[in-house]
Amino acid sequence: MIALVLNVLWFVFAGLATALSYVLAGVVACVLVVTIPFGIACFRLAGYALWPFGRTVVDRRGAGVMSTLGNVLWFLLVGWWLALSQVLYAVSLMLTVIGIPFGIAVLKLAILSFNPLGKEVVSSAEARGRYVPRIP
Image (cartoon, rainbow, N blue to C red; front, side, top):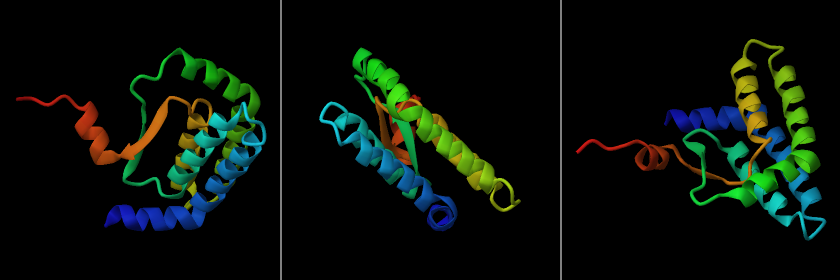
């Protein structure tokens, strides 16, 4: 229930604007055929930015050298200005006391804007079950 309340507040105060920046970057990336994987990554992150509570981003298994090379190209073509817009938006949110937690969350998304390839969005429960060692 708390995740629902947080997601609704997030959507109103930061989620919609953040997701729109990812969608805009995705549309620009999909203009060229070569950069369509970047556009898909943008759309995946836009979905996460709309409704982040109860979900997390983890490294995708099997993501290798191509993801690393793609992230370098991503940073040069899309990532730096997308992260810059996120940082500017986070600073504007942090001007009010109420907006500080949302600004911090936007900064976390800005860090993710630097290297989104080789990542996947999963539920928090799934991430705990998949990545936390289980004691018999």
